[in-house]
Image (cartoon, rainbow, N blue to C red; front, side, top):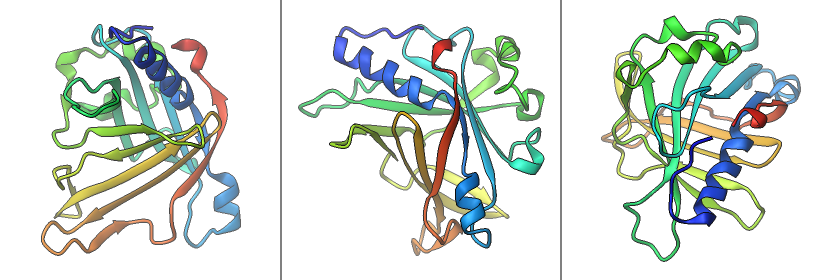
Length: 209
């Protein structure tokens, strides 16, 4: 594990958030209870066996339909670190988001993490405007929201949208809501109309951090 910061509390928070995120998640119960609105989704988040930098913790994320587990419809590299530019009273974390330039070449690596050793910093691109800001809640969870400003651009079916994304995570539960909005009218263009996805952790990879 590599977590470089001079603030012990921040080092501890980075490690805790990463250990809660590192795992295999499923919304099977939700999909069974409400199949018209929720497909069975599998989310797998794996720590990098070799960090891409000497700051924070790096995770690789794949999200896929259960029936198409080897072909994720979304992949991302997540870098949890201290938000050193934040000028608030209390220090906070952020999660920078990266895209793999050749995504298909790494499909399935969340379940074969040794393959991630082939991935270098030259193989990824940071998604501008898509960093996630992290806050602790009174319920002992982390609440995470995409940075404000409507700057996280997502092209969906040829239409430009901005991402409105948030999730809340505890030790065993991951609740996520993502929607795309028209940058002019702010109307929802894509994303859940029935509320957030509710994932339960089925396996933990915290020991790999």
